Image 1 (cartoon, rainbow, N blue to C red):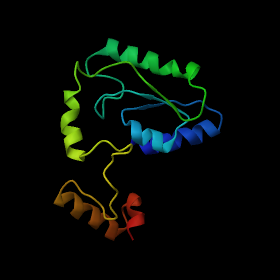
Image 2: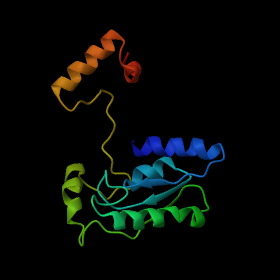
Image 3: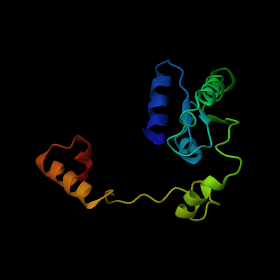
Length: 142
């Protein structure tokens, strides 16, 4: 699930009296949505609870994240977990190069008004579903 959606859902759940914690690997996105509390892990997207086939690391990450329920008291607080994907940050180079200058606080690619597809086939299928009324997620495209 996307980081923005998780933050919004967490705020709604928290508003109903259930404490929440967002685990994130996208700091700027998480900060912009302002969840009740979050634990940031500077790992590649998709690895928010650790590396595959490293259960001890995963347990350590989860233990540290869950401890945030005791330490994060102000709404919107984000704690950076003290784990590293690699000995250097070289793994970030392809991502940083793809998005350009990272000196800005929020370096996400600007939003576009038109839908983006992974392939021409994806576009064709989405447009066919929209035309047939079979795409609940596409209602905003009308």
